[in-house]
Length: 499
Ligand SMILES: Nc1ncnc2c1ncn2[C@@H]1O[C@H](COP(=O)(O)OP(=O)(O)OP(=O)(O)O)[C@@H](O)[C@H]1O
Image (cartoon, rainbow, N blue to C red):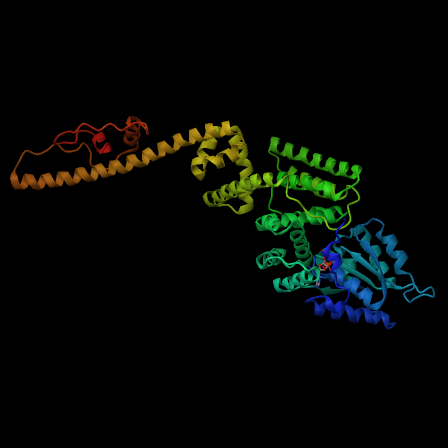
């Protein structure tokens, strides 16, 4: 059975039910009443501007409901929008004898209008006999010709408090409960977008609380994958689909897995599913090419294919679409481990290489190439970044390669340690020798005994001497031989070292 999306089921029908947008609603009311009083406002179009999921579309439908308008909803990026607007904009706006309702033209995504169509639409606004309301997330991306002809109404991002209140109201009406901490987590992650929060709540209630914990155990970035994919799968608009995944902190190959997993839940006609998979396989080709050639600018094409290409593949299932993480829960756990490894490597790169997160993520890709192709260099990076064996395996992508790199890294580390130990022991030896010498001098002075032989050198050691000493040192792991005690004197440098 298709479950009705709660965002639709609980969409406010009255303007008074829209929360925390009072000022905007007041402006919209005044503007529409001017039309109804036979005195169309100077600006015959409105632009409702604000972030997603804050009540813009809801306002239009509640308005229509209260004032008896028929909403003609048009998509700004539809090529035939202009033609359609022309048809409706000129229609008489009073109720006709057949009892047809007045028309209100609603143009969604006004920030997506192509510049070529903008001038024509601006002319239509001048001639409009019906109210035109547009909505946009980015006011400044609405073509200037249109902005000049329209009055702007600003919508605020909703607060966590607003969101929690709305969610609690829905839960009451559904007769369901979810643990308080999950509710708060959903509200926190929604980042002011009530639509996203309601969708998450429905996901959590449908999947059960245990499932919810799994879903919510994801870090914020992964959470935004759920939101981003819900947007990709909700639109037929290529640009919107591309924009949806922009803020997702995930490599495109991982994103591809997520989309791949969800295609069959979104499309139901075999030919549409086939088209979506065709887009994904093209994305995969770009990804492969990027990896082989090191030309990561191809990632953009890959992402375009997997978002826009999939979004326009066909007719989507109606109703609420639940987004599933890739593969089964088992694989999910595996990929969680991988994610943990990736994150810990990224942190090390950020710290040791003084990089921002995004840069570190890109560097990770280069590291992968190095770990696949150049074990010697990879070994140096292993030591430099202080990677664990598991992290090396993650980067090398192959346990045999990882073993070789790990072995080489251990050698480098051993040498470094030896050198460190060498330097410390040499200094220690020198200190002791000096003390001894001083003590002997005092003794000599007091008892006038035979002087002991002095150590060969008392000054700091040169590089060559350290190197020579290093060559002589025993391999680590071999049992250190007890040095023969040189009675009464320290004959060579190695007497110090072996102390
Ligand atoms: N201020 C609000 N008061 C009550 N419900 C809201 C509010 N904002 C959003 N909602 C809920 O979220 C859903 C989505 O809101 P709406 O479609 O109005 O978003 P929008 O601002 O038009 O977003 P977009 O710019 O993405 O189209 C609605 O169905 C409604 O259930």
